[in-house]
Image 1 (cartoon, rainbow, N blue to C red):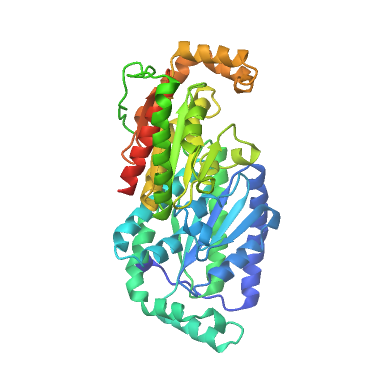
Image 2 (cartoon, rainbow, N blue to C red):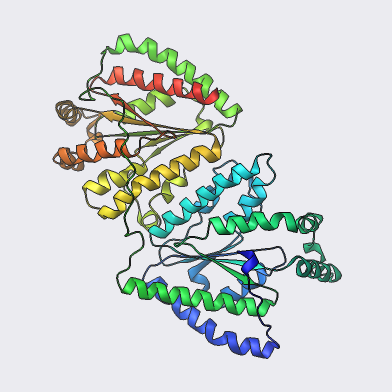
Length: 495
């Protein structure tokens, strides 16, 4: 793509530039207000060679915007907290809510290259980053976010000239570091890498606009013109009913989950007295596993899903009881609040993904999109069908980028056993808080939920993150099987 950049004519005077940009700034301000009213989120990415004018271009764009409606993200080296998270985590948490604009002066692209070219097997690793980036952009685009991406291109000689001019000025000399000169000397080696990255991430939902930035004023006018045209086309398309993500959701193939017929009654039952010594031993083993995961900086996600009263809380309690509380978090998931609803549905879960060496236990999870949101029609059919692919991609990206693991449990319970537990809770003053009117309403839709979770299990049972079905009619046998599965999985991760 870089070889095909057309050299642009120059703006001869500041007066000409100011005359041309004034109406563009006015129009962009109007479009910002329109997008805010229609609750359409926008991401503007400005990338390019060092000294290509990223800072100036970004500064000129935000002059036209209401500062109450945008956020500028200048992406530098990751912080300590960001460095121990999944690669895309720091960008996921910065995606804008509905109606706002997020501007990235450098982004996941710069970080992908700078992070990966330092590794021995960087070409293979960069390929994985490209997959993760395309998945990320497709997911937020399908959810309604408009993505506008710019790459500012200058030739090697022009970059050298700008570096030398900056060094001559005491006010800008500090900007030119030995590291930048080193990158300049490797310009010819970087060129095909960057060109390949642009080509592989030039998609229908997030296309690149590669601009000649030899004349910075002309580049700024090009950026304004492109943003305005893209925003206007988006408004026209959505007025005409062209909704993002409305195409074929691309359902993943079904992959049956290993489970016993009925998937609720365990093969073996046991009393509390019989199971407790086994649990004690497994909990001791879990303490050791947590310590080794932390030492080797391996993160772990444990997901619990299941119908009401299936025993999620009891299983989580047994896993976490003797763990070091500084090394794990339990994330109870309920209905999203207003802020969470204004973002992509995965956003609130990505925020809670664990650091290196830590464990995150989700009491319900992102699978709500294909369970309760599907059954209760809180989302469209296309949205929950699309979620299978989005979830599979997200989980695979997480495992690939962190070297960690995802362990997913479905706790199966029979209709009769659920009723018995509901009635027991209602009769026990210490457990009445566990039973709500909503639990009873959900029970009335048993068949719909059963259909939903059966499809969920088969479409999201992947090599990266397989499901484990726990027969939970006998809660003590279920707890033992869960703990055995967790400790065994941890051992595999450590190996």
